[in-house]
Length: 270
Image: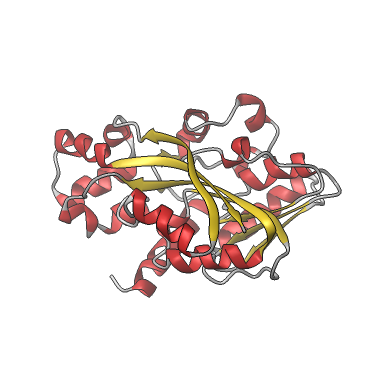
C-alpha cells in the first residue's frame, strides 16, 4: 500500500470505531474495552472517573500512570481517540494546567469533545490534525503521551521530530506502543488487517528507539516491556480478519505474538 492509502484505511477504520460500528484495533474488541484496558494497566478507579464512552479498549498501556504528571503542566496526547488518556491527565494537571488531544479522525474528535462536555473538564481541548504535522506551537508542551498510535504512522521519524519541536526544553515523552522483537511472516507484513491492528506497521524495537534519539531526544529508555497476550489471537475480531487474509492457522498465529511486544518509552528533550 502507498502511504496515503494506509492512512486512508486507518482513518476509515477508526471512524467506524468512533461511530460504534463493529470494529477492532490493537487487540481489543469493543465489547470488552474495560477488561482490555485493565489488562494493559488502567485501574478500576481510573476507568470509573472518566466517561465510559472515552474508553474503547484501543491502547497497549497506560502512559499516564508512568509519566509523573505535575499540576500546572501542559500535556499533549498523540492520537487521542475518545479521550481516555486526556481526561486522566487533566485530573493530574488541575485547573492551572492544560491537556491537548490531537487525532486525525474527525469522528474521534467529535466523540472526544462530547465526552469533554459530559465530564466538564475546561482544561482539555481536542484538535483535528495529523501527528506527523502537529497543530501545536513550538516549545509549548511539557509532556507528550501516546498510546498505541505511532506504530500506525508511515512516517514515524517525522512524528518524533514534530514531538521534539513542540516540547519545551527539558520536556519529555512517555509513550506506550507496539514494536517488533522478531520478523513477521511476509503475509502478515502485507496484511491490511494486520496494519490496522497495530502489527504490520510496527518496527523493530531497536529501530524505534533509534528514531527517537535521531530526533534529538536524550535519556531514551524503555521503562516497561510486556508481551502481547497470545490468547488475543483466538478471541479478537481483528485477529480473525488477519487469519482470513493470510490463511494462518490459530496455532501458527499464536507464535506470531512471540515477535510482538508492548513497550513504555521515556525520553527527554535536551
